[in-house]
Amino acid sequence: MKYSRWIICAVTAALGLTAGLFFLGSATNEQRKATAAADRALLPVLAAGIPTAPATAGSARAVPTLKAPALRKGDTIGIVAPASSMDQASATRAIANLTRRGYKVRLSKGYLKARGYLAGSDKARAAEFNAFFADPTIKAILCLRGGYGSPRILDRLDYEMILKNPKILIGYSDITALLNGIHSKTGLVVFHGPMAKEFSPGRGLTPYTEKYFWPAFTPSSKLFGDWGGPGPRGRAHLKTIRGGQAEGVLVGGNLSVLVSTIGTPYEPRSDDCILFLEDVSEKPFRIDRMLNQLRLSGKLGQYKGVLLGSFTGCLPLRQAGRIGLLDVFDHYFANLGVPVLSGYAAGHQPDQATLPFGIRVHLDATEKILSFTEAAVAERR
Image 1 (cartoon, helix red, strand yellow):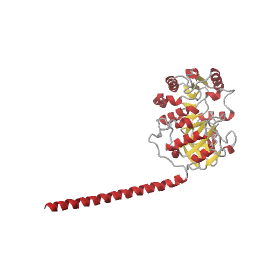
Image 2: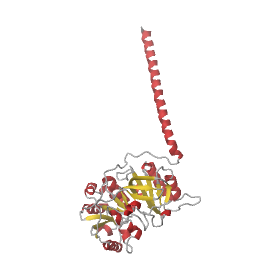
Image 3: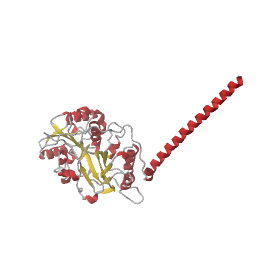
Image 4: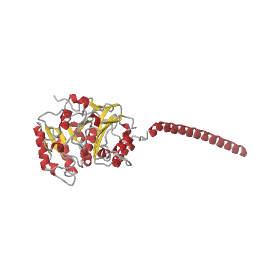
């Protein structure tokens, strides 16, 4: 009986070990199959030379689109300083040029309060920004200038209040943080365009910039079908990096500011979107590093198309023995798998088209045309 029990235990243990090895082998085979399938799926991407990366858990999700009422002559435009300050003479000229066009102007108190590179403390700049959005008499907010400071007040803005008081917000460069943060949090359509700084020299905006500025704040325009037109230097200046057509919600702005918000609650949307990028005075290796951050974050591979604006002073473009800006563009965009158009007139240059972030646009990278499929503002009754 003693030996019988021993034999039974030994047989049971052997059977259990056999079964365990069977299931382990099955699981290993399944894992190998899954790994092989994943490797096969990656082959076309790796062959293209630019692997994608998984989406981050914190990617901004779409919220319902919110449009501010259209702008009319006689409306009040508020000028705020969420970033850097400006001298009195420039501010005075900007007000005069806006008034000459038939608008009332209200200037925030912080435009002269220079605190190093900031127009006053974070608390004061955020408070003025919130106050201008809450004021029902102000129909549009024109940022004073860029510089730096906007990202520092993102967590001080009253997004619930902004949601209840939609109005036109205009800016670019450092203001990119506010444009994408506000759109991502509230759905408000915002505008990448010239600021009070551009209204201060001479009589203000250049003819090209003026042509594609005021119509952006109207419910309809014949210019919507080919926004920006051939550009100030002709359509030949526009370069197709990868042809094709795409439709999606336009987002983006200044590359260096945009990537600084990745992984935060204020990062730009990527779902069902077309990405616009521009920058100024950055070396090609820095542009490379920032685009790689977009890639590694998983966002670059999610966009349905890419529109590249001016990269002023980001030299060299191409040079023997060196990697230039155009080489960087080729690396990240030529095999991205979506339409990519470069050379669009928007960003740090005198001639720039205003771009609404948050509306659906159609990008034809082959024919070099950007068109709006909807207005960026709501009709006023």
